[in-house]
Image (cartoon, rainbow, N blue to C red):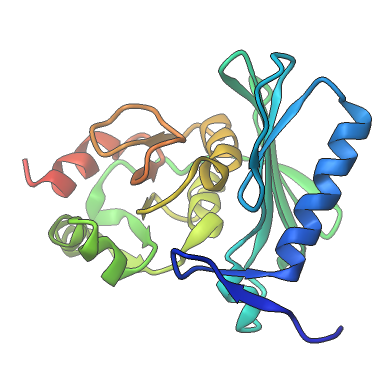
Length: 234
């Protein structure tokens, strides 16, 4: 394809022409199919809630990866009705993967057209856990650096896989926790549905279930309370 048109937002994050084109396309498709629904999206904000339901989207999660030629990026789409998330889809075409879940129906992963149910791991000891986190500097800036070090010192292994992928690794049982800072509802809505339907937990740093908090902890559930203690130093 041709060269990407890249601009910088006021918060110094990047946005490409593909971000805006994908969100515009999805908004148009939703408006045509569900005229009573509203949309909350990263690039164009939100319209007043019409009451029939709301779609929450990030057209490209991990835009910086796209700009640098890294295939780890995804379109995130969730549906909310009456304050409850009902559906979540994490579609990563560069990885040939799509994670998806519907409330009460479990979570699934499709790879190259082959679909299977997914579930979190049963690891219940932090010493056996694989820990995923977004960026060390960012977590330090958010006041979570010491807590992260307590966790990684206690854990079996740690890796810095940011954005949606860390949460999906937890959902599919490939890791036990993902720690992320500075996120928005469109970043977390779809992963929240997939993770919780796979048996995991996503909370703020006080342990409250949340997909709208700025700083989040995802886990397989078995380790969650202990991870919160390590993060806080309690």
